[in-house]
Image (cartoon, rainbow, N blue to C red):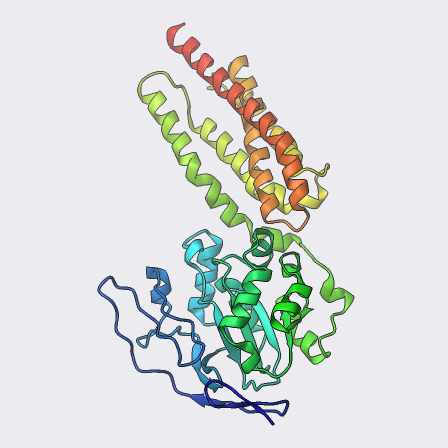
Length: 404
């Protein structure tokens, strides 16, 4: 005899088709301008509030614009999403690449679906970083599946797995909250391979009854993975980090680095204004060049730069840039480059490039947590000593020029 769900629908091993319903009528907006989303009768996402950027992604009904309609299931209405990305999705990803609203670029955790899923359709697990969510749904065109979105605080799968937010406890919690066992009759959830470091499959099976199947590395391989009977080829398991993959990450690194440098430029301007500083356009170019070296050139050329440590790679190319700056200013007829300032440049510019290159370890698949910790213990003190020494030399040089 089939078991009855709390909503009165039966759950059995036979294939059960679910009914589609239209989107709800517009919801009201609170006085603070935050749109509350009401939970479905059985297993909705609950009452949530949103930032200004998140509210812009919703229509007059308080529903995300990429939601097509709702699917009636034993646990209530589940949102069916489009597999087509519109221009706002593309622009949103582009803005996020440039660190514009990055921390707000996320979707609600919970259960979604694509196509016309039933109780035997596969369940794909992903993070609530919207760029990741968009890539997954885009690759599921003509596929019927459930998408279980974990609350990773808007962080992608790989980084969230390292932080623990894409992890065992969250997956167990989300399976329970959405009552997945009442939506599907099989007991498998497909987790992206890059999330494996945060998932204890045996514990999830013990706590929920669902077995974890690790899927391919890339979302583009998900469709083939499903059609091949959830069997991943060696190609699907191979982690690649191509030049293009690295290049698309550099805008965020560049913007993040430039923000604190505005303070440094302000200090140089003040020193010039009060007569203690003697910095010009070439000094500004020198600093900007060191930033570009650490944030763009080193990441792009990463595999071909000698050495293993990111900080060393950044130091090496930063030193080359410092030599170029020193030689150029030394040959300039209008330059007042002293030996003290020359040494300061040879300390500060490589240290800056080294530090920024070290930051890229958080974006790379070439590193491990233990390796990064070990490198930081060695590199950070050296970077700090070089930077402080260089700044002291610059101040000494300014005092000599100002007071003779």
